[in-house]
Image 1: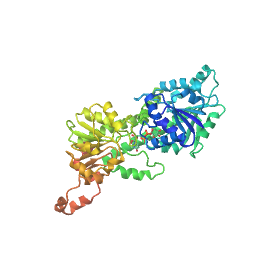
Image 2: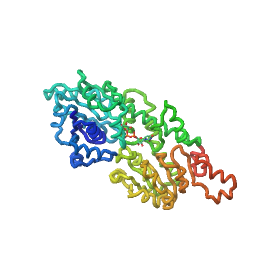
Image 3: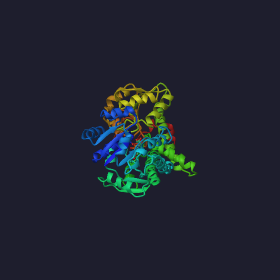
Image 4: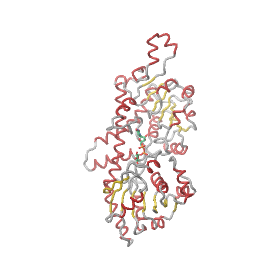
Length: 479
Ligand code: UDX
């Protein structure tokens, strides 16, 4: 099938490359001139594992082409998929760019074509979609076309895999009286085995939001549970490990830490809570999810301050990771940015490292005063504490014993529960995370020998919060 994908950001470019992979003839349209020229030169302007290789392969095979001529592209396509941005980068939906795109594109769509909105749209916008398209077609003197939603459920960092092997395909029908649009989408997805669900457009929009709201709620729950674990001296890893074996619960999205970031989860929790409240629908759960998520960022800074005696002024904090999660260059609503600001506000200096240079360059423009190191070791050297914010796998491979020797104080606060407490403690660190207690380095063997059997028992004891009261901040000990 011939498909035009309009908007080549994280969603659109993955969609275009994935469709080319399935053998469709794909035309990518992008209005951002800089982004388009990068793509025309064969380069992918964002970090997404496997995407560059796929794009290169399909440019070479001819299955994927990029063009500035949207009119010509959509006039010759069976399907036109819109993947333009629908948020303002802050806390609001922004449908003006989508409406502008519809105004440009809809009059040109082939009479036997169909329009598919791939962007996430607010449920309240869905009702406007069909009348807008219909009036644009009328004004152009052209017959109506099917209008559908086809929300994506891909995660940055594994977006291609998620696209090529989805759990479900959701199709929302805004207008498709003869079923032609749904038929085209069935053909588009014919090579996958996942359930193909057809529903109303508003159901599709809310099913997309519902999935993200539930994931956000799971993460907030894990963070609440981690605080409970800390207060009882329990270990979140053990607790979630046991809970996850219950098939009613499962283990995904239960990792405690500095909370969720990115373009979807935080934005959709806040906008949905607001929209529901405006409709008179109480939503205490979503309000709590947002509050817990915000709290995690300040709690993280609080932990660093506690371990440094309560005052961050003049302290040097090594921040590991800036992107909102590993395997992306995306800084949208990244916890790192809030955390860096909070630390700087308390007159600490923050020197950050992230494997994605582009993310480092952008972060310093967003957070004035943030410094950048060119290696994790460079950030850590001379620091009073390490703040791990993004769990890039390479951070686990740091020689932590060597790193400890370069620090003023070997303290590490693991904001993603990503590192091994045992490894960090034996490297000489005081370590804390979320729901994992507070850990001091193991006593020296000399001490154990002097202390007799009790000391030996302490050395052999598993690393748990209960063995580590000494460095636990008063608030937690008392709490
Ligand atoms: C999300 C949805 O997962 C995806 O289906 C949708 O299409 C777009 O939004 P994404 O924002 O790329 O994807 O990231 P995701 O992997 O879901 O993680 C979101 C945030 O939650 C990240 O900051 C991540 O670090 C955090 N997270 C995730 C946790 O804090 N704990 C977890 O257990 C899982």
